Length: 347
Image 1 (cartoon, one colour):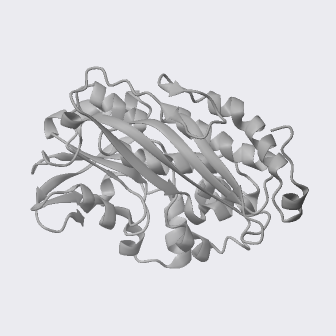
Image 2: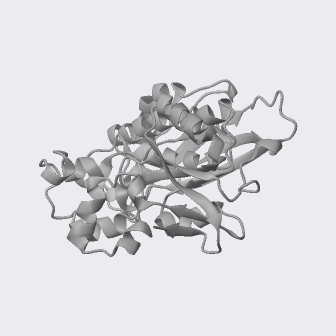
């Protein structure tokens, strides 16, 4: 690495030495995420992981991939890059935990106009924090300079995660039944979806992002919008460890309630959700007021304060809420599974 330098490549806009500096800056952060099963260290051509499958009859790997979307623009406008990586991890691991799979490892991809090692380290700070929150290891990644394709200060972040679950313990909705209770886990805000609408309605390119806003409880607009996506991995693990029989799970992302809740339902069953059963976060009221957005569009775009919904037997509802409270989650009984073909009803 010390002998690797190309003046010609640097003249074309790619500084390979900046890439090496980025790796040196992030190496301790990456290694802080290592869990049993990680093999090797940062710098190889492939991340290796040896999963512990003891006690599993038929291990199944579950994978998920996602990015952060145009929420990145808020990070760039505020020059705050140390939390956006949490969002990237969350969007992947929250998906795979829906199937009951515990995340094992994560890999990231950062594309940038120009490699700024300090900023790359900020981004990876968030990625490693997300990995620690979800108890998975960051085993590799890629940082790519795209001069001429992206402005120097621009970047994009994406990643993917792989988890594992025993086949007989997969959560797939097959045992979903009429009368099951729906438990909603509180979100931290907009999470990482609907930001194209948010940016238009709130005119974030010209808005005051740093002054306190009374409607937001004294938070600034930028602070409220950049709040990282909640990671629900530990919460679901706690429920499963306590013996809660989770029948189905839905991660409320882009498309809100109307798109995501039906994905966990089976034919002939509908999730009936009571809108007065959980608090609507102030940021959503601000967005709705500023944009004069119909209620249905709000629930068809945003999570509205509920980031994940679980279906489980009614007799276990109170125990589940207690376990979630002990795990540090705000959770609510928000409805029930009923007969019907709509997939979801908001009442």
